Amino acid sequence: MTDQADTDKADMGPVFDGVKIGRPATGALLTEGYRTMEDLPENLDELLPVHGVGPKAVRLLTEARAARP
Picture 1: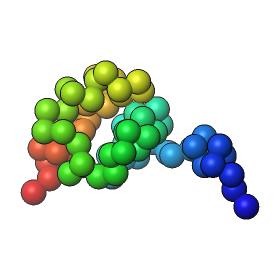
Picture 2 (picture 1 turned 90 degrees about the vertical axis):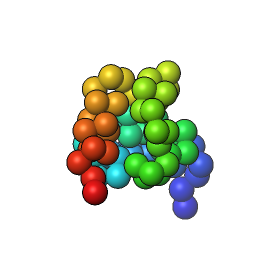
Picture 3 (picture 1 turned 90 degrees about the horizontal axis):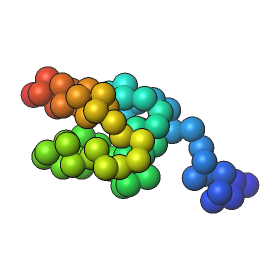
């Protein structure tokens, strides 16, 4: 049986919805309740105040969003 503390500290990996943005950024987005690219705000710069999400992650997400059909 896994307790909640172990689940909260679980490694969430470096990939968010198919985009390799790094472990800190992925964990931060998931912790904030984002699960898919569609969940993210239209203006991805709004994610910068989230601890763990930096300019590189925002750039990678922006590029991935632009490449999606």
